[in-house]
Length: 121
Image (cartoon, rainbow, N blue to C red; front, side, top):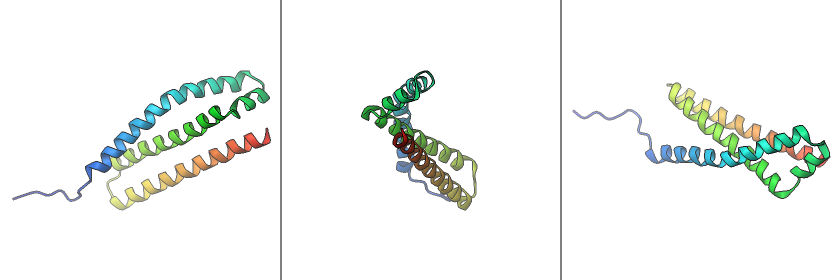
């Protein structure tokens, strides 16, 4: 008698998810060092100097990239936790969907606030 699992999960989806977590983590390492420098600048330099430093193209790209990577990495990690600890498929689907929607909403708010700071200054 052959036993078949009730759910078949594609290994390629899991592999992609695993690889994306590692790629975002690798991207966050240098960007987080950059963020520490930026936060130090925010705490020690006058507001106008910090704003002009942030308005340079490289720094602006770094902060936007850091925001995207950190929220995407967090969404991937939370999805793994949800998949591991919620047994009911429908609740798991809604929880993952809700978490992803929340992270999209949070990154959009962060972008809007950053653009608001840059436009006011």
